[in-house]
Image 1 (cartoon, helix red, strand yellow):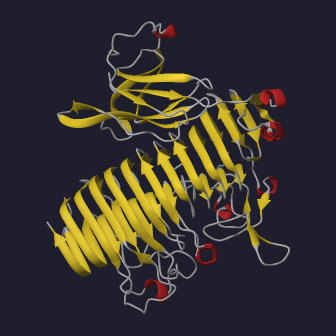
Image 2: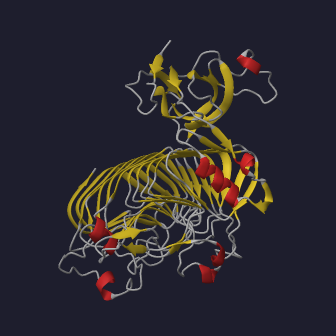
Image 3: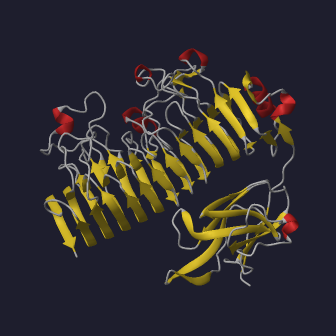
Length: 568
């Protein structure tokens, strides 16, 4: 028997032993890792070589009792007891729904007795009290306004306590979080915003000057600037140690009759985010479905140590500016096992515009994106365009991009500033299916009122200065792109500040038979095209090892102003 023991704290997984197995003729490392443990919930990772979905279904047992069947690499566990020791086992096979599994005594025939992974021992954290929002007067009938009752439960919750939202529909305007808080939405629980107009949601001033006029207090923000905005449906301001988890739904209540109206989408105060975290530390979001956000769904802003586990974010494909998750000037963000299907970029990593960058010097850094499914958005993983503070050290591994306009999308332009550094960006083991243009690095992005000016769009080099952004090292390894339509890759650096290093290893592109046409990048230089090959311009060092383009029309590789090319 193989054994991995997790420390009581549940915060850090120790060095692991592993069982080697063969799946589909390939030798892989089978291991099970505890990613997070709290009082009543945990997250386990089942590593069997699958991407987002495991290669087969597993039944999960805790202390010998069956709890769930799963086909997800990142699997959420709920309904645990506080301050309790558990042994977790995962066995191949699925328990049928009508099987008598009470007490874990009976196991259906299709579940194997032998565990697929080394078992894991862990111990849940302590909990002081549970406060049920029904005891505070919440009706949960979808008719009565439950805002004040849920807010009262939040205000009354002590450290190490839990606010419980049982099954029901809780109509609210918005809620404010506080430090040392846990909120659990049980299965069947829906928190639904009924904010039909701008008059019903509070505002956050963009910047408030201190009494001595020497400092400032930043509350509201929109697209990289400190601007007045509506509060989030859930808002956390300058807090720490928060968990929001469960199997319920947080519904922003937006529609094309309200927040998504064309005349509502570009005016201030900015539309609410579904979850807005401003200067927060040590926050975990686990499980839950976030849907129908008025604008960006999840927006951590100047935060540290923020984790998202097994969360789903769904908005209509034509809903405006409904990015899935936008970490902005954050440090230490984990995005694991998430599913996105939204109306804009699935994940957009940002770092403000020029004022915030010059004033606070806070890049977005140490971002981990793993075992996620990203589909139906404009970009799967995007950097920018508001990234004047820089984006440093981001890893995207073992993900599926499906039916997005672009896969990786870097958006920058002259005027973002010398602090707009993009460096140490690493994509590894990515499957892209029907992504129109898999790789886009666009240094001529025509955003903002001056986006079409000669200064932004001219291809001739101009002297680099304090307004010039800087893209350094990008690496893409073991990536398969099938069903491409517009272009395999569109990479265009600035002539006066070339991309330092671009590395591709074991990357393949193949086009759909009846490929659509479109613009590979939002720049005046791209134009409409279809089945176009790999284009790279203004790069110092370009390394291509085992990179292939299939089914394109015209040249497979087009290079312009590349100082050093190594192609194998």
